[in-house]
Image 1 (cartoon, one colour):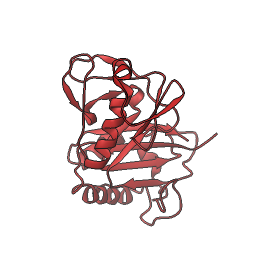
Image 2 (image 1 turned 135 degrees about the vertical axis):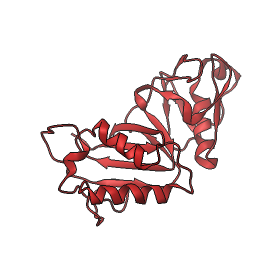
Image 3 (image 1 turned 90 degrees about the vertical axis):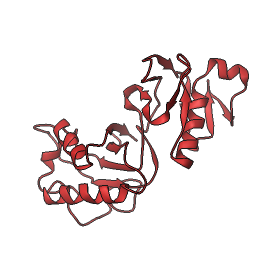
Length: 213
């Protein structure tokens, strides 16, 4: 069956704000009984996480037919959050609303390598590839953002530079931020709960990612 996760990402928080904002949200989650204050080995990819609390149902859609069996991992460092398996087939410019296809190209976590039609390449694409493949420029921007916290990609349609964090990914496959709340193996989080998290974050924009390993 595999493990699945849901991540609420603060896309506005700066590196300096992330830890304080995370502490505020976790304090509220503990006070509401949604998670427990003590941390245990209950998440994947992190040493410790917060197990579900007695009132975990307040965070999920109504009438779940199963209980969560893992906990909450809190990320407070610059992270490219993604949905795990597979990859998006398209990305949409928030300015001109043109959708650019990315099918046949898959993202690799080192941000420098990319795969086109099954062939592994490294570095930047040559001139011919640049005309036919949009993915390498997005992969390069991810690497730049991961290193510096800022990157843009020129829209293939309107030619205007767009911040990497503003592009709209198919199926919300990616989100970029310094703060992420990652719930492992929980029923679907409710929209009211996600809205409350945004309020606790000072009204910051949030991204929501569902993924599976």
